[in-house]
Length: 193
Image 1 (cartoon, rainbow, N blue to C red):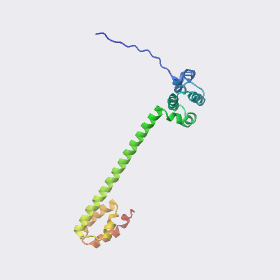
Image 2 (cartoon, rainbow, N blue to C red):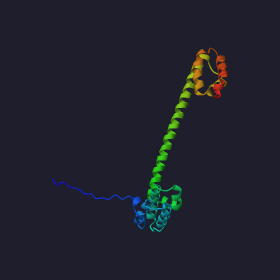
Image 3 (cartoon, helix red, strand yellow):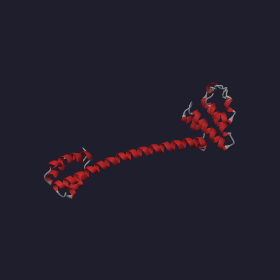
Image 4 (cartoon, rainbow, N blue to C red):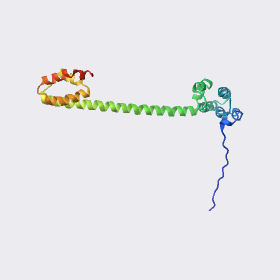
C-alpha cells in the first residue's frame, strides 16, 4: 500500500508589518489595508473608503465595506468607522446581514429566556399566594362559618407574609371578632409597611 504525503510550505504574513501598497490597489484586500503599517490610520481609512466607493459591483462594494468595518474595529473607534464608511452600503452586505441576524436571534433568545424566567417566578409567587388564600378561607369557613364580603376583601388584599401569619393566628380564633381584631392589628402588614 502506497503512502500519501503532503508537504505544505507557508509564510506568515504580519499585516501590521506590510506596506499599505500591498492591499490598497486590490479590492478584495482593501479590508486588510486598515491593519497595515501606517502612521495615520484615520487617513488610511479615508483612502480605503474612497477605493470602496469606486467599486462598480454593488454586492462586492457592500461586502468589502462590511469586512473593512469589521477589521477596522480592531484598531479604530466605532464612531470614526461609521462616519467614514457609509452604513447603508454595509447593511446590504451578506456579512453584515449574517452578523445582524445572529445578534437579533441571540437578543430574542435572551429576551425570551428572561421573560420566561420572570413569568415563571411571578406565576409561582401568584400560585403560592392563591394556594395560601384558598387554604386560609377553607380553614376560616370551617372554624368561623361563612365570612362577610368585607372580611374576604381584606384577606384578599394581604401580601403573602401576612397570609402566612394569618394562617398561624387563625388556629387561635374562636369567633369572627377574633379575625376582625387580627386584621385591624395587622393593618401595617396589609398596607405593606
